[in-house]
Length: 252
Length: 261
Image (tube, rainbow over all chains, first blue to last red; front, side, top):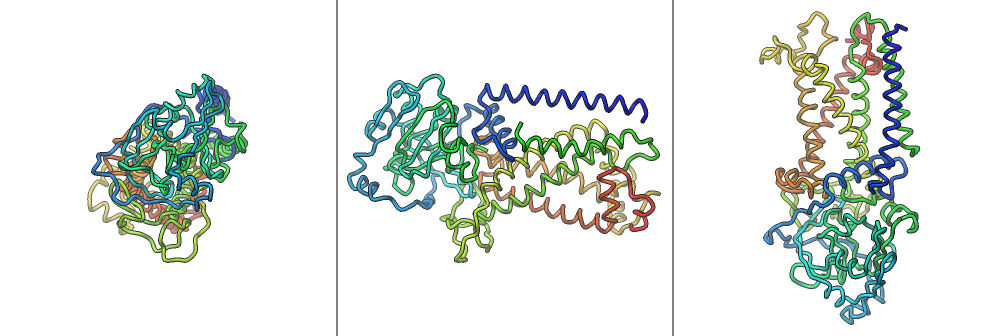
């Protein structure tokens, strides 16, 4: 072996060690800045973490594209919905007067809001695209109350890092980080295209997270929980999606 | 560190001894492929095969393609495939639904996309710095004519050592794949990311909308798959093991390899 090659090997070794040390430092910084998703373990963890971290670094406050009224889909696709339970049908017959949205966890004032209470907190609308991970999409006007106004009413505590949201269908539960929870386009939606939100599209209350794929926009929302860690929920992966093999972060 | 990340590092480390050997061996002749080209070639190969397989699996969940911003089963498709789907939300004419493979397919698709993009960045930057593109892929001075293309297509060898350099058709194809098709497939793929579109709406708007981007992503991917098939066929015709060995060890196959050509 010639001396030049030995020097190259030593240089290569030093570069490799610096790289490993660099990765360790990057990991610590990423954790402190909240750039690690709850489903960062396993063989797909590195790719998922890179995607989430880069998206949060380049566009934490970016707004989802909004469209002119003329682009609203004439026939939006109503995705399959599990048949409603008897309890749901009873509430539907009564105009959802008994529907309650519970807000609990790390909040100063736990709430149990009726739909009228939610509406009274504020009304906004957006014309955005629903994008399903299968590949299809449609544009609709979504009318609702920004989630941050509801969280503000409940007084979320400073250590909160995620908002967990649950559906009346207990198998559907999701969570989002504070970048999406406090985002101005994240709504608790109760209206669509100038009318009430139809049951087929998630009425009476649907979470709308327009910067992520459709499966984060959970229908029939009944429960919000503010938390500082996803470890305590389900298998600790962030939501029902990763437990079923799908990424927690659907902003890609 | 996650076991997965360690596994990936180990796979990379396994290639290092080969690189070190290439460096330390006395230079009898220049290696057919530099260590940079060999390592990035195989990382790209692994990433691309993973992307192609998972990409087609994802298409199976909605084997319809549209043009413009929106598209769904209530909209007339640009074209659709008459195959069974992995979802029951799509009318296919088949009375059964394939198993859903989208979860792991999507995880792997985006992880492999990162491997492809990072490898491509290393290859692209190093390729310019070392003169790899200029010396080995840009058509040589005497080869920039239609006559040269015609000669290459008829299989006429011009150099004194045909196996050591690419002809003008090969160079044109490689440059197109590296500087047109791969950038295009990455661009159209990024245009499908909702959060990336929020940050950079230009990426999707310039393509004519989300569904146009999805359709273009599919076509460009198909062209890359066609390239892969032709590429592997040509390698097989030229002597599969000698060419593959050259891309792993850097050494050309020698007399044995030549005879097969």
